[in-house]
Image (cartoon, rainbow, N blue to C red; front, side):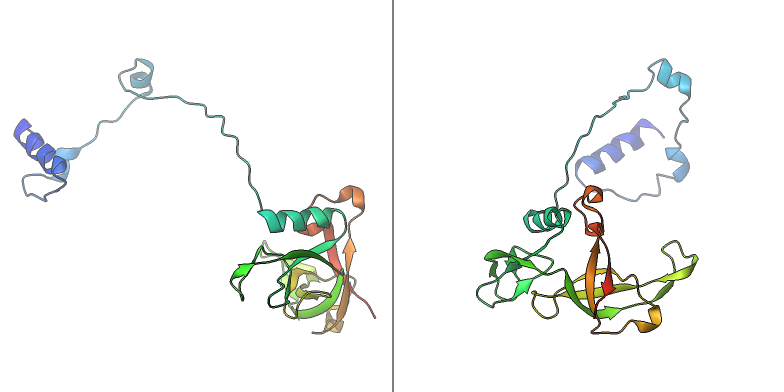
Length: 190
């Protein structure tokens, strides 16, 4: 590519206008392969940076407290005093009233199955010998329709029913980490 073409291209870029011209052909813009020697001999400008990037992630006020309480074997929710709803998982803002929630409320570790599935295929798409039974559990003490998505255990898949009463089975205190899996699963209760 000659200097005249390069100047015309530079002016087009400087004005923010890129013109398609028959003067320029793809072969005019062939790159030049770089070799390892080009870098060693510093023929190419480059930076070799080893960044030490440290970061923290937060679950936010409501979920952080929820997870901390799970570590202690308790389930906590938030209450909106305007509509009276008890929200689980807890939220700092009531989406029905468009206002901040008012107080923390402990709820029971029991509830009812709202919906469930029986999965014979694992997360890695392999066939399972024993099915997984994920379910939404409406927690006692929370408002209707408020629940936790978790697993059912200690139950024959054929016996699972919507409305079935269940209770949390907790990991031993020394194994809890402050995550939803501190509840191993929910089992049926009579």
